[in-house]
Image 1 (cartoon, rainbow, N blue to C red):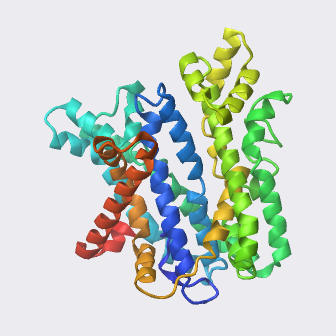
Image 2: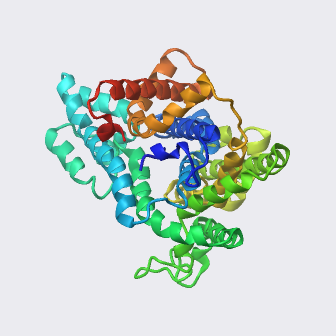
Image 3: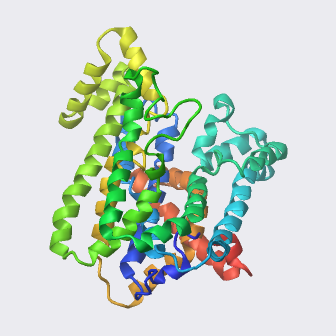
Amino acid sequence: MNPFPSENAAPASGKPHLVWIDCARWIAMFLVVVCHACDPFNCSPDALTNPEFLRWGAIWGSLLRPSVPLFVMITGALLLPVRETTLGAFYKKRIPRVLFPFLIWSALYALFPWFASLATATPEDAKTLTTTFFPYSGFMNGGNGPETTLSSALATLATTPFSFNYFSVHLWYVYMLIGLYLYLPIFSAWVEKVSLKTKAAFLGIWGATLLLPYADVFLTPHLPFGSGYLLGTCSWNAFGTLYAFAGFNGYLLLGHVLARISRELSVKKTLAVALPTLFAGTLLTFVGFFWVRLAGSLDKPEVFAALADGAVSGKIAALAQAFAGTEPAQISAAAKMFQAEPMVELFWTYCSLNVALSSAALFLLISKIDLAPGRLARFLATLGKLGFGVYLAHYLFVGPSYLLAVKIGVPLPLQIPVSALFAFAATYVLVRALYAVLPKPKIFLG
């Protein structure tokens, strides 16, 4: 799938082109780019010691969580129920348009360190160039950074059928997307036949699964068998009671349902429902994430104190201190807990209640955008054609755009959105140019 399938100029019911869907694509894509523009804040040398990096990384990162859910909801709104009558027809039409560009770009990302070695004088220069483009690659090999030989690049490439890597962090989405495509026509048969009430019941059960990430962390340690054993899950069974209702399939159905409900809601009612929901979801995301980062700094008194400075975060700091206790051993143990996965991004989990609230609210708000046909509407529609290419390529520009923002003196609180603007613009221009010059651009760009 292209996250912006060419058919999505019209929803599955054959309705006219929806400009608000184009707006949703642009907003979702930009949120994704801003999300990845936070990466240098999360993994730079200053990220673990500079409270301002932690503070602004938490603020911007918490505003961005609806990014991926929006993509999935757009897919549900446009493709449910699917129009193809057989599995083969659906898969043949959709999956190759995702799979081939994905494989090509996975290869380019995996080979980048070797390309860097060809373009630089020394292995250290190649390593520096690679970590500039791919900030997380600095964590490779025990913190020594990436290897830049051809054999290492080919070894990384060989893992692509099984997982993304440090150079293609953003491609986790494509693995998930292919899975949704495999599932979508089967799910569609049910969606097409059942009532809105039945769909709402499914979403209600799905809503319960959005609490599971928190139950895994805060509840399971107090159960008889300890962490990881919840609702029947255990070392020999990963599929608990609510497994069949969990995951991004809920966002598919949510997009389908909200797109139809939105038609019946006035702008006034939409604002009355969506704005408080968006605020609540975003606030929960920020407070939770900032609390985790704050508690993770308990063993660094100077960082903890600087983060806790201020009226709002001071209250979060009190919670962190109360949780940790006062003994040094307790503080150290609590800090280590909050520094470890899956705790670090617990409140950023896409399939969590707080993120679902903000994603649903933002989707509803966007659905009320009404633009008349014209030049702007035609420009917005271009992302339907270019969107998957922009998604695949944008990570190349994240690191350099951050360095550019720093070099031109952008204030630290604005470095993330400004570098995202640079990266988004550069990627959009690149993809448009590739579409113009490549003989078969869809093979490379979807």
